[in-house]
Length: 192
Image (cartoon, rainbow, N blue to C red; front, side, top):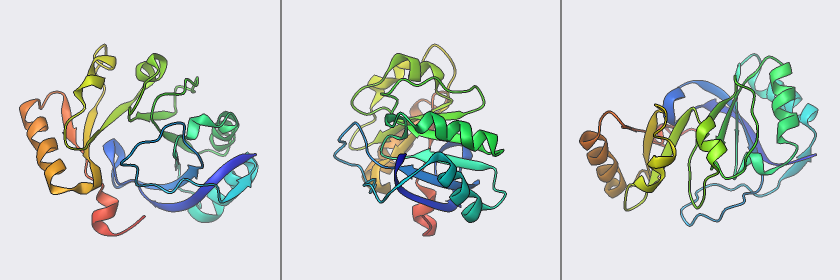
């Protein structure tokens, strides 16, 4: 059984896949306690992987993209079973993780790592994209973990606050080969 916060159908509002329709599966719980977290990832239900896949079908129909998010979706041991079940159902699985829980993932699973308090080297090495939260400063201390390979690195202003946006834009302009700006587009257009 997986602890679930919510499942909904929307569009990806952040990162490389912005604007792409996706079913979001928000697993409950997190192993970190970030002061700026804007997400309710409390437990609302306990479902099996098969029940979650059925709900994904019901909400998203043939939508190929499913995004596992949280909290920290990889903190639940059964998340690997869910990834397997979604892939068997023909879904393209994307995961939004803080990168602190080492999990071996199939090569076709897209991994977004947004480091906060700690980062496991295996998850940094596996990341398809990096999302750094800009909250009063650009957390450049994480960059060394990703420099061995060219990984798109997005600066995401916390809360879309003007001061954080200004910091992110300035950093992106200063280092355009390294940084890209990622605003929470879904919040601007008023969707989940």
